[in-house]
Image (cartoon, rainbow, N blue to C red; front, side, top):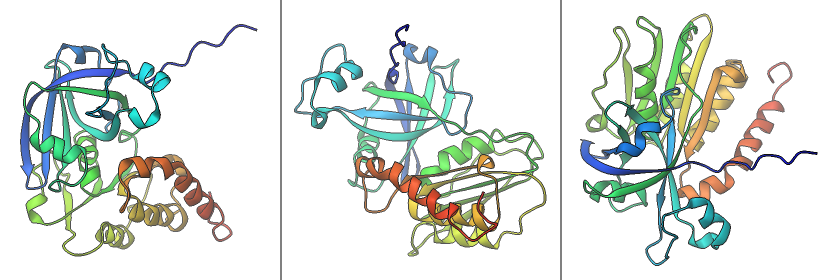
Length: 285
């Protein structure tokens, strides 16, 4: 029997910081560039993401940096930390890749880095991944998310056809976190202010109270795992949306950093799916 071809690892990309921009009090845009982005594969999806690599300061890595060699030859606790972020936009002609970061002071790894990074610094990242783009054939679109999903929602809104029927709900801390977006004519975003409420509570209320238009809906629901779980159950069990018309996932989870969340995410997804499939008779997909 012929040998199977070796499985290709994730593509390593190199870029340099061109500039940063403070979008709101708690969101910063980092624009990356360089000729190495000429073959970067973003463009098909509006939820494209990259995995930024943060090498550990006290570890020496092979030069030139080779992520496959690192993962093959070095202990796991010496691997660079990874943080996953959505591609806000990619201009292939200009070789510019924009990534938006939510900033909460010194909390976390990628946020503080984005707040202090300077032009000229090299950035290593894997990707892109992605799977969703608004279906132009859908009768209407539902887009729901917190700040972590705003880049993907904004990119998706820029892609929907002119005149498309869209219900877009974005939850942010307060009015100061709203962004001016370039939207097709007739498309608007409903901004929901969290204030002191739990993340996603306002989003759940908004979707539950929405009078769903008739016809085929293509839905995108992403953000904190707690409210995503609740809305996934609502959309699949109560609204009876087909699985294939729903892009839904927890980007993060309260009380977990990305390392902890990613380690448990597959099991969490399986548990949620099992709960839905065991719902009342006639409601399971």
